[in-house]
Image 1 (cartoon, rainbow, N blue to C red):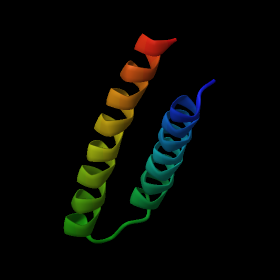
Image 2 (cartoon, helix red, strand yellow):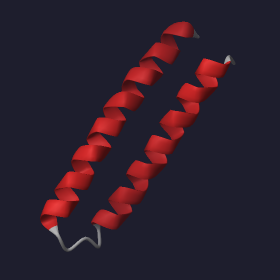
Image 3 (cartoon, rainbow, N blue to C red):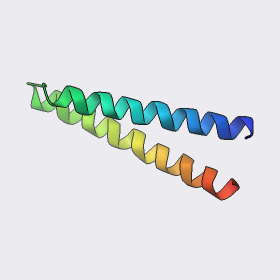
Image 4 (tube, one colour):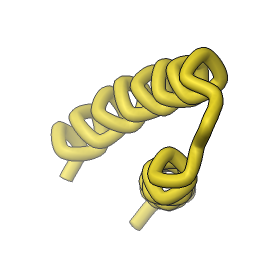
Length: 60
């Protein structure tokens, strides 16, 4: 695996772990606006992960 592939995989893993943490937090969140902001940020991160994984898939 090349350095750029390792970076892409590590970034994807970090984003997924962050998303899971935010989902767990959402179960206890009392402030809907703050929760919506967090979920939108997760969505943006997941879009980036998808793009990176598609690029990685094309290289493998």
